Length: 109
Image (cartoon, rainbow, N blue to C red; front, top):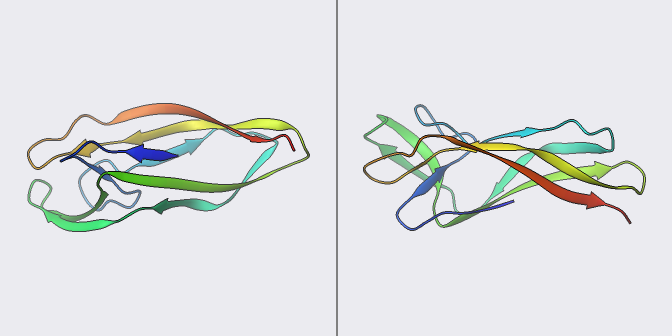
């Protein structure tokens, strides 16, 4: 999944630090899909002290990819479904956390 972040805003990492809501994924159980490892973040990770949270935080700007490897049992086409909760902030304010559902097609070879 790719997160495209508007200019001057940032999206918090899964391990963001103390204060903001970190990006969190919830995968719906699917008997045909087995997650392999944890969800990786692929992008330029920023670390900076944030005076609003009085903490050093980890976040992304512009774009970040979240990658989850899975093993699909059998040859059936199925979907990886779930939701992602995230929060974005700029230098002055934060928007309330938001949760978005997703479904990604896998398998079917």
